[in-house]
Amino acid sequence: MDELTGVQALERKHPDLPMQPGHVLRREFEYIRHGTLSWFINFDVATGQVIEPSWGPTRGEQDCVMHLKRLVESAPEVKRWHVMMDNLNTQFRSPRAMDC
Image 1: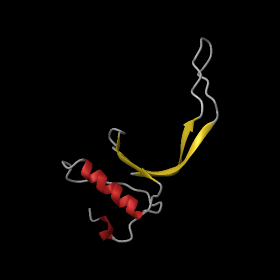
Image 2: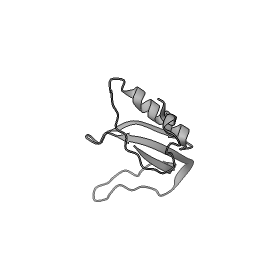
Image 3: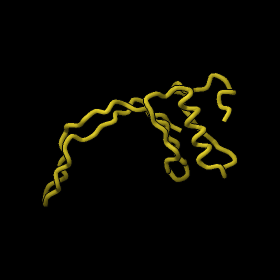
């Protein structure tokens, strides 16, 4: 599981210019900002596939718990999960915080 904090939600202001023979794709530099988002993303380490991503304006302990609940509920056939996390600031204050 990884956290991406303060990711800018951007939209290109103008479409890409079409490629032409002898020229690379041309892209305008202007974009529209839509604020920032925080992400929780799980990766299957064997395949590199993303499993059940979550995003929102915050990334606190409750956001992390809700994300992990969604992850577990996404595959009811799985009997055991191994989750590796860094300790940015969503580490749990008590073992009971993870009552999923």
